[in-house]
Length: 130
Image 1 (cartoon, rainbow, N blue to C red):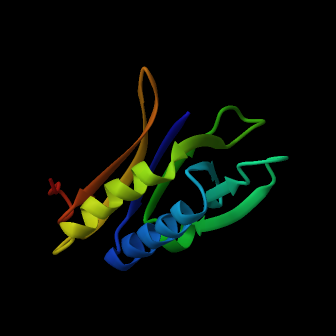
Image 2 (cartoon, rainbow, N blue to C red):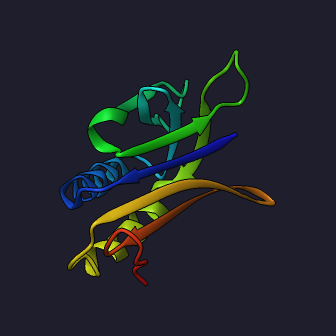
């Protein structure tokens, strides 16, 4: 499994953050489904039958200037990752507070003992923000 995507528009970075902020209000955890079409953020009811409660599609062609991924297999060409909505929103909020001059954001799946979603914010094409 491999995944790397880049958003080169600060308004789309802000929209991505806003979508995650809204999802955080509904659920503590979220399932990110990565497919050829883009990212799907899905939350489930915390009690009962675990029915999908919210489904957010972030289109690949509209949001991402770069979108590369290799799924689990040819038959199941997608990646599913469960994450804490609060943790990712907190990371993106720290980006927002440093957002003056931010040009792009890179999201990638890294494998450090377990799969990990990594976010990097860049001021220009090659300059990383701290």
